[in-house]
Length: 286
Image (cartoon, rainbow, N blue to C red):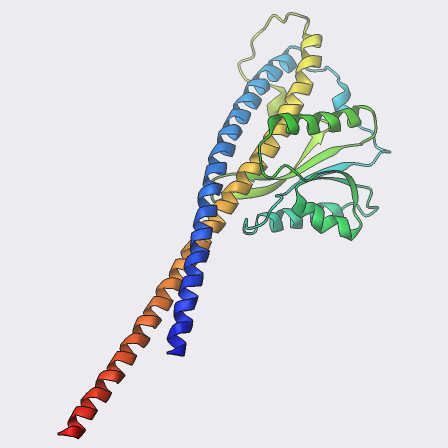
């Protein structure tokens, strides 16, 4: 009987855990849906700005801008985007592994890390890496105003000559179940051939002059690129947590099924034993 009581206690405990995991899965699914909506909007905005920028570059391909400049003597910055909380499977582990790989390339350890998320900060701060900034209160929320403010602050530091480059390390969203740790060089801006030219070139009339349009458009395009990287990261985080909670719920159900079978088997054995004792007693009294 003691063993049966223990199994029942374990079943109640696992049922409680399953309910918690299920609730967290539903919360993550809700956050994932909102983040995915913001991500789709961010992609549309960047696609629109891409089209405008390509037209400007076709009209004047040799234009210069301070965001293209290199400041070699100054240290570079690595923006590391992780989550503030855990229970997201291997999401943070893969990002931290890629960050370590990138930081090992800088043997002089001059790279300064801009932390977005507590998990990355907790891992690298005690290991002696230089921290330039730390934003530890995002909580996976796609706050556009805060994201843009972080991007503008880094851009101003780069334009002032305080940074030689800015890279962003984040989880690129592929699908609900797949995200890919990615590093992009955000500043200085480097255009690929695909970005610097478009097919079926057309002539456009710019008002004001094309140089003025370029000066205004390029910083907006850069901020939209930074914003999209963080929106990809937040969407990937909620997707990873939703899948992790679903797996935990499924595992709890499998364990419940196994314990329920064990409980029923033990109960059946106990009942069979009691019936055998009753039959034996009746036979002895005849």
